Image 1 (cartoon, chains in turn blue, red):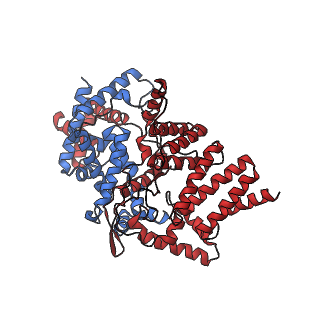
Image 2 (image 1 turned 60 degrees about the vertical axis):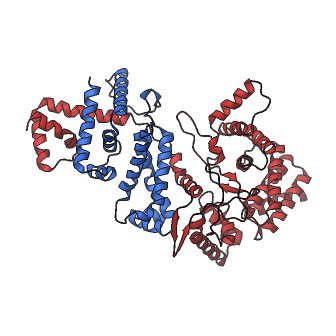
Image 3 (image 1 turned 135 degrees about the horizontal axis):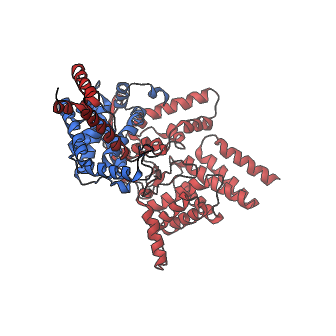
Length: 181
Length: 372
């Protein structure tokens, strides 16, 4: 797959549209980790993340004809993944409670922090995220877990940048007020 | 700027998303305000907690096979318009004949957490294709992209031959460079894959059978044994075999797969079991029983005699002769060696090209043994 590794997204999309299946494979290879990470962040479940990741690329593959060259493939594919995740959440796919998370979940804890207190905090954070309205939670996770800029989140969610800013701010306020109760 | 104004901007300030003048004003305020500084710190700490609650990403193996898994799923869903040069081809659903077999890709990686898929890695962690039913003359499930890639493969093979390589050698080189499941089948495609863009409907299974058999299969089988049920169903026995394979108990796995083959012949499950068996026996450390190897060889022999013109003839011959060769090595019997050698000769005629190099080596080894 050597020649495809250096190709830009636009070049790969052009090739994929013309039937070059390895170009599509290269796009998948380039982005499937990120898409999986996003789906995992939102769904908190590997099976669900796997389904959403596959479905995202299948939909992208089928909709290639409508993809405008020059547009940002990354935000386009993220948008598909976010919509699929939100649909899945609406269909009552629950977030995984903290107790069900594997022990290998990374915990950021200083040497001085008490583990039980830390676990309690994470429990509260998780519970709060679960109860939070999806529009706030999604914006927050895209920023905090996926590292997207406000401009990118704006494209992914299809809302103005100002709305992104207020949703993330609101999400943090909700977390802060509930966690520090 | 007062506290409430600043706090409305703290989130965006933290993310570096404010304009320059607002950034400067917020910075100036928090440098002088402990309360707002603590407020900002609480946002940082909460962000860190949010990151901590995200489950860990799966092992790299999952991502390594993801593109292939996706392609298999795209093919099975079909109906995606693809432009191939000037020819627009629809990826069609392909109609499967009831007595034919084709290889699909089915693989998965066992995850660290909770339920594991019983899509099991082989001993060498290569994908495990699932054999499904397909008319041997029907195109493989890469309709549209095959139109361009077939021509490319053919021209590469022809170039290699022109440079002095044997046809078999050139085809094997293509196989090594091809991604699974193409490996083993590229040689056939290069020679015979001219009319793939035909709009035929094949009822491919929506999911490889092996995906359906999760650890529950093992629990069910244990439950059945516990209740004193005399027989496991083929499905639960298949699941049991999968788990044994995962645990490295290839002998038990092979015996169970062989039993599945015997109890449910001609089904997708049997085809999947057959392929799993051959993936195990292809390795050097097989502990399969002679009976199991013989059953595997017998099944491939039947396939070869029914579909001598199949696109799968090359891998079918490879697996048939390999099983016989392994039997001969195990038994060290002259009659088994003779049988294996005859099979190699027969298959060489069927493949219609120069004998593949690994078969040639086995043939030489068997001849040498019989002479000595």
